[in-house]
Length: 431
Image (tube, rainbow, N blue to C red; front, side, top):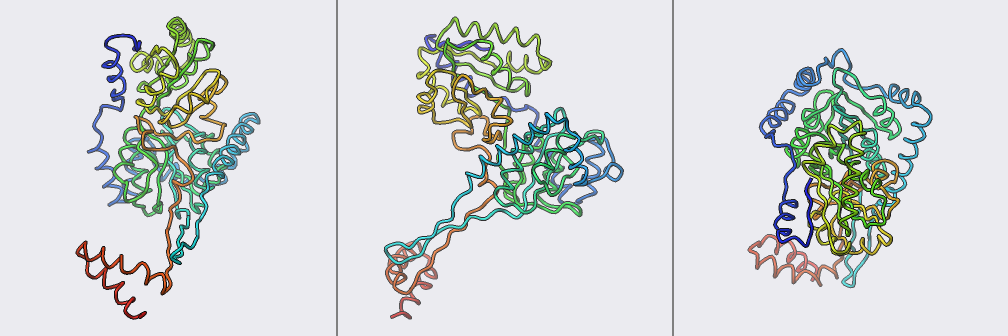
């Protein structure tokens, strides 16, 4: 774990190294993924069957390719009441939040008499990838599927790996709650390829979203353009900006809430008090020893964690912007003042009683967020990721006569005479 203080003489260089640290999996998977994608594109179901048997160790013809909707409904009904209520609460809040994201069509006529506007429509089909290897995340299914349904997607396809043929009933329950139209027992890069190109059984989609391992991320990168994707996400990250009035145990728990995801996760604390920063570090160590996920969280904290001491929390914000983190907590009395200084983050959690974990499940905003400093130019998953905008315009004779001469002049200047002629002929005809 790195300890930094802005008063140190080598702070700038060491913070630069923290910002530029690459935490993605080192293995080069591009060539292997290209082989998988090409095989699925060319061989369809036969390739899916072979890759599933090799990588997930089961025969799709025996275990079944597609999960029956009745099985999803049964999995939901079989949930313990407390868990069913929790999933329903999460789904309701996610849906309510994303319904407010639906864009509005525009239609107006300007001073030249030109009718202009834009119309939003959902894509026809979307595919959602849900991890099913080391861990299964029903919350991820809800976060991806519900915005698609809110957007108006008619066909929602879920793909999820089922190692040894086993599928997590929570994922099936979430698929039922999110009204998924299809659930397929395929995962990995081969599932992404199937969604992009289609196979004999699985019809192609228009947009693919959802997190996965390095192979899944690389497959999404390679099929982009054939389909739309949400983002190529990397390891998770959290930045906590906290003053000394916080309970160090709370802040330590927040840092570890992300560290337990993966050994490549990054957890960073900005504190305005050296003694408090030390108490948080001690609390992290205490909590690690009692954490069932210690093996993962400890490596993440020791390899990628950092504590940065700053003179004031306000002076931490430009440093946070340079990190452009996936999650940032502002744990202080006046979080809005700090939030007003923040420019780059996937999602912000304001105040001492807003742990990031709330956002992972039931708060409402999407937890599919840009990582690896991509919050500088990207946003979290939302309704418009499953929609596209069509602009339109309509001119009458008067409007064409007003705008036509300038169009002709620009087209000729660009060396495009047919462009100019398509306008000029109409103006001449009108006259």
